[in-house]
Length: 145
Image (cartoon, rainbow, N blue to C red):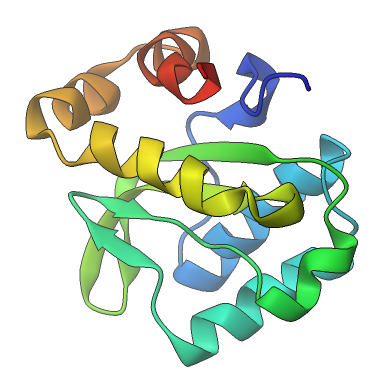
């Protein structure tokens, strides 16, 4: 299995100005990486209708519903950082991290992302990072077994 996050799956700055655009932007990176089919983005919106994917510490993790698992071809992450916070149901989001977990692999991936973002010092480093490569270096732990 290849890495679930590559530098090409990180976009900074993101171009979205609202939650729906941010979900689409994070989802499109997953589609472009070949990890999911385009219908996965629709499932990300379905998930958001039932439960907010805002996690705290400037992080939202949009991902598809369980019904969308057939459109997932490989586990992958997309990371979009915003210079200006996105209003996510009244919360400030600077990072939209799209997740696709192949054969149920999303929970392990979610756990790794949550550990990084639970540490505000790490979040501050991610906010201050000057490039996609710097963000990749800070998040590369998600690729480790």
